[in-house]
Length: 336
Ligand SMILES: [Zn+2]
Image 1 (tube, protein in one colour):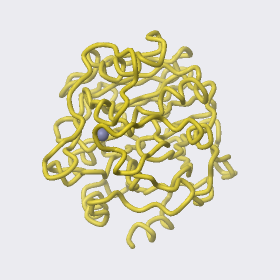
Image 2 (cartoon, helix red, strand yellow):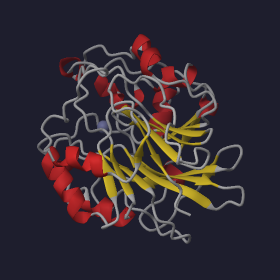
Image 3 (cartoon, helix red, strand yellow):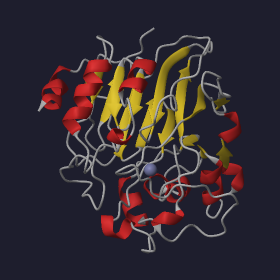
Image 4 (cartoon, protein in one colour):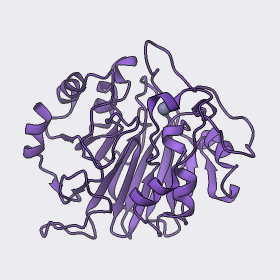
C-alpha cells in the first residue's frame, strides 16, 4: 500500500519502535535531535495525542474504553473502563492543558479518569457541553468553556496560556461530519451542568465542535512549533484557520479520516488552508472493541486509499504525512 512505502520515506524521525505493543511514552533515541527543542507527538488512539516539547505537554483527549459497536448504541449501559485507562494512559503529571474537540463518548468518556489519575494537573478546554457534561465528575475550576472565545471565520479567538506562558492554545469553530448517509448521531448540546455522567452513549452529546491551534513559545515569546488539531472531519469553512498576524506556518496538522466522505472538500480544504509541513492522520483506526496491543484496522466504511490520495494531491510539495501506529511517537525538528 502507498502509505507503507511512504512510511520509509518520511523525513520526520520515528523515535519509537513501530510496535503496537508500546504502552508508555517513547524515549527519544534519535541522537541528532535536540530533544529539548523538538516537538514530539505520541498517538494514543482515536482523538488522543500527547503533544510535547521538552517537559511541556498538551494532551488531546484519548479514548481507551472503546466498547463494542453494539454497546455503543442508545440505552446500552456504558462507563469508562478504569483498569484499561490506567494500563494504557501514560502518566503526564505536569501537563496543564487537555483539549477536547467535541463531547461524544469516544472523546470524553475516559477524560475524568485521566484527569484524576494520569494527568491530575490539567484543566480541560472544550465546549460548554463538554464542561456541563464533565461537571458531574470534576471540579468546575478545572473546566474551561471556549464557545465565547473561539475563533470564528477569519476572526481570531483568544489565546489561553499555561502558567509559564510558554504554551498557548486557541479554539477554532469547527464542525463534525455526519456518521453515515448524512446522519449524525449524538448531536445536540447539554445546556446545564449534569449531576451524573451520562450512562449510555447517546447521553454524550456532541456540543460545539472545536479545532485547536497549539503554539509552543520560546523565552522571547517566539513560536517554536505550531500544531493544528481536530478530532472530527469538518465541512469548510468550519475548522479553517482565522487570520493571524504572525503568518506562522503550521508545523503539524492532525486530521481526522473518520467519516471524511460525509463532508465536501475534506481533507483538501484543511490541507490547503493549514499548508502544514507534516500531517498526522488521527482517529483512523476502527476502535470498536479493538485490541490496543493488536493490529488495527482502518475505520469501517471509510476509504483509506481515497483519503490518502486526496491528501497527497492537495498538500504542499514539501509536506509529509504519517498514519501513526498506536502509542508511537513522532519527533519533529524545530524549523527556525
Ligand atoms: Zn464524534
